[in-house]
Image (cartoon, rainbow over all chains, first blue to last red; front, side, top):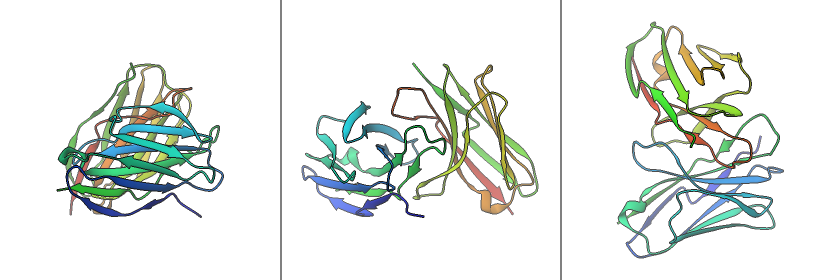
Length: 113
Length: 111
């Protein structure tokens, strides 16, 4: 079965650079979520989209932005990167009303040096 | 505000033993989830619990939900080394497009 695809798997950036993370949800899933997980931390919700519209916003810095495109893939754009942005970034997708819960991608490990 | 508390946060146990991880949450929630995460890996869905009294079992893991007590448990029976991982519980509420996570329980099972 198709899963949530994230790219890239690993990314190394320097401080003050920008990064773009991509997420391709499970086909027909209508909701996409972005989470940030620091070392030894639980995942922190950043932002979500339902049917290509932003549906909820969490602890996402102003330096970050995200959008969902017409093909339902989503991108998380991160600018003016800081050392503290180093983390695992997970994308998850779900189908509203489906009882199976959320499916997570493999994550993008971002390292800011 | 919805808060989720897990305990213990760290658990080291011998193979063959039984143990329980607890997940308390602060307000009414529609669904409760259990996830497993291996180091540096993604979050693997284990159970989705939807209603009071729900009990689900998969292999050596069994999860239950008591919505009146706002408590879920993840019970490990006759633990084996392969179950070593971090286990998270998470809850969501109707109308909110996000999960609220517990801090995770790091489980180490020694041969």
